[in-house]
Image 1 (cartoon, rainbow, N blue to C red):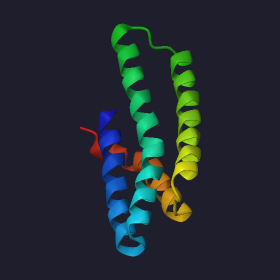
Image 2 (cartoon, rainbow, N blue to C red):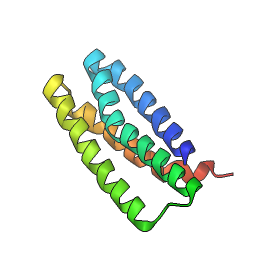
Image 3 (cartoon, rainbow, N blue to C red):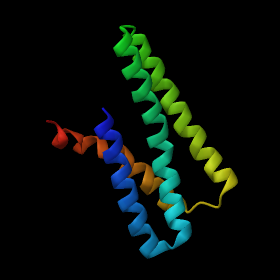
Length: 111
């Protein structure tokens, strides 16, 4: 599961580099904020789910509560980013999109 997190981080950093080329510093920060809005809650979710599975306490409820909290955290980060920084909306949503879609390519990394 952690390979997916690393892949999300990698594609977010690549997207930030492209945004820096076209949009400058504001674009880079906006892409990083958008990517972090999905990456950070996903990392916490994976860590909690791995810990629950390791201790034998994992259940369907653990998964669904974690997913709900992940969505709520993502929305909270996006709102706070907009409130405290003058984001470039297209760049921020682009960062969110590439982090979300990195999961589709995670199957290529399976061993």
